[in-house]
Image: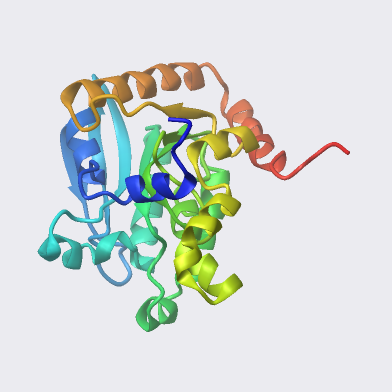
Length: 263
């Protein structure tokens, strides 16, 4: 694996063969009940959210869904959520807080949708509201980046107590192609941009942006989902030991320490 480049990871994160958000829901949870709508505008199919059982424990799960084929991808807007998707996610998070359920998020998006309609309906405000509310949510939050983690579209579901990445997932403020187009006016230099962006799971772990890298052995197989579920269940048991005040303080400190350095 030493010969794998950052852009190789990008291509792996985008591969059609990777499990989708809905695959994680069906692979990890039982008795899942999907909930729809933001109670303000519409339902966003790019975000699948609801309640399910992890073992015998009810959890709220929120997953960004890209779709598998052309029809599904069009329906899911290629995994680029609209503001109503983030508002739906926040509605479910606040419901989880009310009923003391942990929140599990699966992120796979190249970024939030940037069309005129999304901007008119408050895309930036919706994401910012999620960041604010998640920072103070009084229940445990675990976010796993399972494919692409693009810009604020990913961050809108990633202000969590634990942020993990699959070994071939990526997490970046911009796509390598977009970065290359801006810096060098040449999208073909995406390989070089990917290396500079430090977007791999290994980079994120080194920088303290995430806590854990999940291996991709048997990716998509029942044994893979069982392993992911076991990791989540074990981590929730650890987070259960914290009081609400300790949980919020540790979450605050987690993000405050990012970007600090010693000379």
